[in-house]
Image (tube, rainbow, N blue to C red; front, side, top):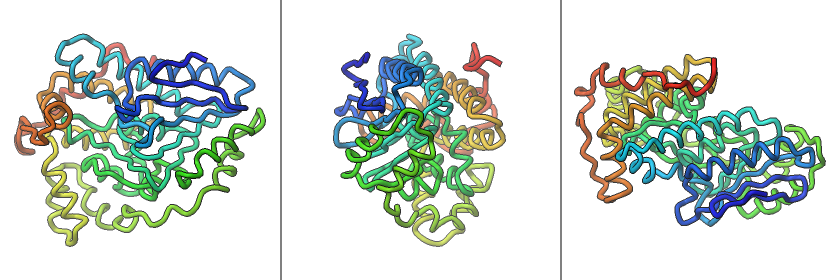
Length: 352
């Protein structure tokens, strides 16, 4: 197989295996990695000896922490075009995963964020563990939930997806299953046994067979914090303005609402308003492809937005955790400011 240093591709029995191999960088995705994964999936789909595909991350910390944000930041500043190419090819990969013709088993053990959610949430067999920490934390770096999250988040129960998208807070295995981002919870120590069991499945194995196999190793995921707070979430996050959501949160008693309000107050005002509008547009959309195309247009706007560069600087480069957002308040972010992110990409991501 065409393995690289950053992506290890192998066959084990009837399973095609993709292992992300940048553990020191939390397996953050680069353009060559996206291309290697896409090529491997095409090869495995065409190979009659491969019954299913397994995607996992190397190292002890997680599946994937997202795209390599430093490279995107640098490309945007230089105007090299690499950021646009990365997003285009990553989003096409996300769409291909959603339509993959064979069981696609992804092991979300540990940190699964941003681009890692793109590799997992659209798959057919999504496995979390007691170590899973899943999030779309983009509003904290002046960006927005992408990789098809504006399709997936609005389809979580009630307003759970709005809570996830605006706060960017981390959720565990039970919450990931509740929100529709995962299917099964398997104890981390049992993952090698799961891989071995999948690798001996016969050719022609169908999705239901793989689900049944995973269930034999899947204990109950436990109680979901999001499910327990659904009434609060649904009341507070139903509004169509961030200001209205914060006002609603201020009327809710308890630590859960106070935590959400406090976190949102520190996020990029532009990113918050952009994210909410994208989530509401995603709720009304007919397909993942429609959302991905809209997200790509927003990505092009992000490259010309102060908060993205400031957010990455504060979180990743200088690490002072003290971004200076501009505009600095929600009231200063106008509808016109957000409209400029809704210019369709040229050329479109998908042919009409």
